[in-house]
Image 1 (cartoon, rainbow, N blue to C red):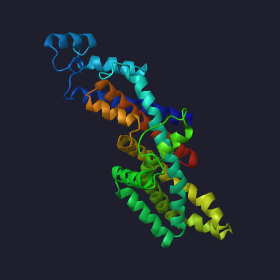
Image 2: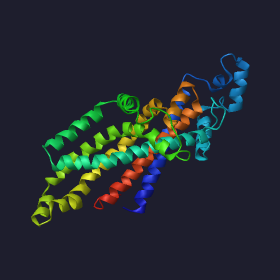
Image 3: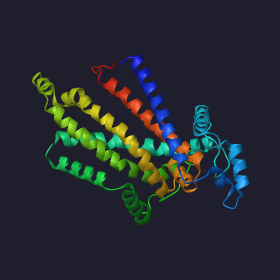
Image 4: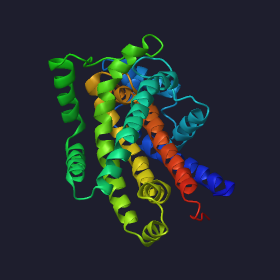
Length: 315
């Protein structure tokens, strides 16, 4: 992997974000809401609305509005919220903190469980462990987030009263309280991630263990453990990296639902509030930040893919 490839991927990510920003801006332009009318209220006179539209630059051509908006985004200025009258950028960045904790916690939990489950199922293919892992995977994929969240709340928060059902506490205020409030949301989000990745690891590892070079390694006298961890697992993890990157798209969508259910003040919940209030600058900022997170995850996945398999040649 060369620095030229990394630069190429960075430029592609920038281009992708430019296209995404154009799509996000276009969608918000066709929404049935007028920013000036929303700020002034339904009883505002047409003259007052027209004056505010002129002051906000909403009477300018659409391409000029987009150029002004994308220029502000480059400088970190996402505009002013129509709901609160405050800058959107700082509010969204504050909301990004809980969302990142939820996403990172879910990915960590997925790595702790998905890889061992996939390895066990592949090594003991056709046995009881394999059937159990497949059953867990099918259940994880089949159950929607709101069903999983409701079950966890009923069992862990209502019946057993082990964990809080909703709310959020910052780590700086109470680390143990923060972990307690994030536990159920993290488990809810990680369930489907574990199901996806464990199935992929199991499938790929089964194919690799049946390959010729693995048989050759065994004939050379390597132990089963050496073959598994030094040869087979590394190749089996390559497709799993792609799945993890794609699952970031699920994280972005699933987090919105989970944050709403567990009342987490994350960017997903902020986006729902913005949509309900027709807060166009906040909608644009939330959608753009989520898309940027997805592009960054795919960039990291591409780089990790190349590092794990140096044989892959990139133009």
